[in-house]
Length: 127
Length: 332
Image: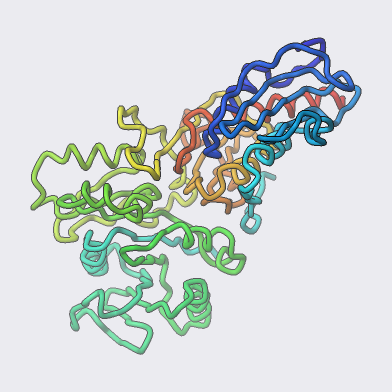
């Protein structure tokens, strides 16, 4: 259980480590820190905070089981904007850590392009 | 019909690719090899080695074939396959593609992986890179093309070792930082035994990486930060987690993931590991081995790329796995 939310998924510490590495991979300067414990909208529980070097602030929240398949919400305040922007109020939710990373990258590195995987033709599979 | 193995011979300008190739074409073990090159003139074959010639093909004594690429490599490979099937060419058993000295091997690898028609006839065997023992350390420092070629190689051939001042510590350290896993073989004036250099019978096993030896030079010393990162783990990976992992690798590391090769213990297939291989965002479908190649049943994957944090792949996989486990438990 994390912050009152039943979960067997990734711990907050492991999440922060992954996000720090991801920032480095994306060449985005910033800090990932523990989130202040506080109840969020719809029972969301803060999992991590991120402050990018350009001033963008990001809050990453775990969503309660009642909202499955959605698991994560990313809210952010772009640098230089006043509190209460749509991105900060509503954020973007996703069912997976992959979706979380996609939303986070959109928040801190909006100019970067994600690349879709391309698989070659099928090979044999175990019988 | 078995797929024809294709090896890529790359290396920076003046590193000795062509000298090596010229020597190999005379070697009995290299009979029935089709070589794709840019120009005949570059290879400088002796006339007594040429059996027949046309504008585009040289048939050599000993069974080798030289073919000049005209524009599109994929088209050339398909043309070769079609002529072979029609009996218009001798039954070559392997292909070696010699790249130019400034070439990036990655697009060639991607074409071999992703082009359906090419993949129906050929399979990638390995990348061999020549590195000049005399000037190589300096070349690797100055030219990103040389670094990419060395980083992507499965085998590295050190040329001009007879005239390079010993020891080769600076070069070895530089190669360690780029690609510690690729075996290095010395060649003098191109003389080398092709055994173990090009297509072997081990097929997909040629892709099985070994964890690189620990080196204090793991971090690259240049702004392009090409280095290799290894992921080794004992616990098998669920198939759906592996699939999501590959997707996330491409999406997040994409152009910076120069090459990835690995042997994966898949939970649903304990006796048949999966060989995975990718170049940037283009991945081969996993190839399933009939059995483990050794008593070591750990998953081991090598990532060669730019600026990939050492533990990022491991942390990403762990996160995906945890989520897959949670979702499966929820759905039961």
